[in-house]
Image (cartoon, rainbow over all chains, first blue to last red; front, side):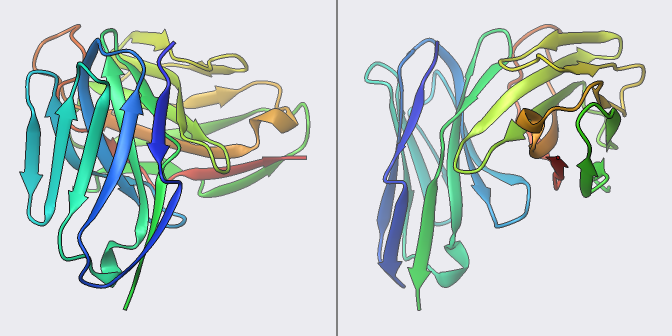
Length: 111
Length: 118
């Protein structure tokens, strides 16, 4: 069974700092990996989708990398802002449309 | 586009009652999903559908039923509510260009339904 782990569970940083969120998964036979953002009491918003054949994806201040062989992905946030405060979840897709989510990293950016 | 909509936003049920959580999308997505999220936990897939008339079980299907009679709607049915079903339920949809393949596009989520069973 696929296990998805996110470390750290919570993170506080001062505004302007660059930061890295980590996601690891046990079964490397993934179809793709997605990073989501969840604001309190809200649904999830997709940030980046990396196909299994790709190494990284970028969107604005966000960069996600994927190393399938080691079962790891990182989400890099540059020049963090208070508006980045949210919970960040990663999810991996196996063939057959089985999705597995991590428990998330709660990020607080302090002004 | 309204995107993915869910009703109701909140609901309290008594043990043994039944209810249907509604989900609709107006993006003409072929894939739809139901997840539950328990406090401090990640989302777990309950059921999914790759098109009208086709549904399949996810990781935690027990106690739930779904149907997909149209592309737009994907209701989730709880027949005999139990306290273990207290959770936040999210519906999502996505588009896959290749029928039957794992979805390659991003998932769009609804705002969620917070269900409490007492």
